[in-house]
Length: 175
Image 1 (cartoon, rainbow, N blue to C red):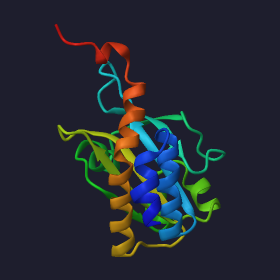
Image 2 (image 1 turned 90 degrees about the horizontal axis):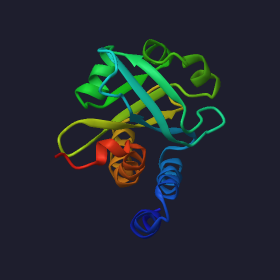
Image 3 (image 1 turned 90 degrees about the vertical axis):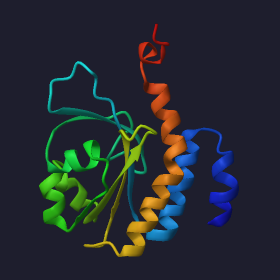
Image 4 (image 1 turned 180 degrees about the vertical axis):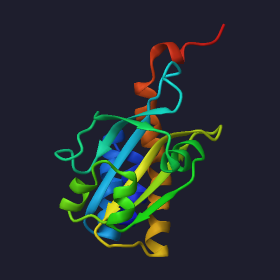
C-alpha cells in the first residue's frame, strides 16, 4: 500500500489511473464500498439556490456512471459540503435517506454510511467532492481520518479533471 501511494500515485499516467490507485488503497484500508468524485459545474447563469454536480469518477460506473449529472437545491447538506466546504458524515440508512434521492440504490448495494469530503481550491471554494460510502452503519474516527487523507491524495488528479472540463472562455485571460 505504501508503494502504491509513494511510488505509483505520483507516476500515474492520467487522473483516472491516479484515482484507481486511491480506490485500491481505500479498499485495502476500508473494505468494500463506493468511491465517487463529483465536480461542482454550476454555471454563473444558474438560478439562485441550484447546484449542478457532474460525476468525474466512480468505482462502480455501472451504478454511478461517469459524466452523470444531477441538480441539487440548497439544503443543509449542500450548504455544509459545497458552500461552507465542511466534511459531511452520514451514518445509518435514515441519515442517507435524508440527503440522497438514491438512498434505495445505496442500500441495495449494502452501503449504510457516507463521508463526503469537500475538495477546496486555494481561494477556499469547494470545486469537487470526494465521496466514500461503506457497509458499516457508522464510521470509526480512524476510518473518517483515512477517508479525509485519501481525499487530499486525490486532489491533484481531481484538479486536472476539473481543468479539462472548464469552458475555454473561463480559462481565457481577463483583459
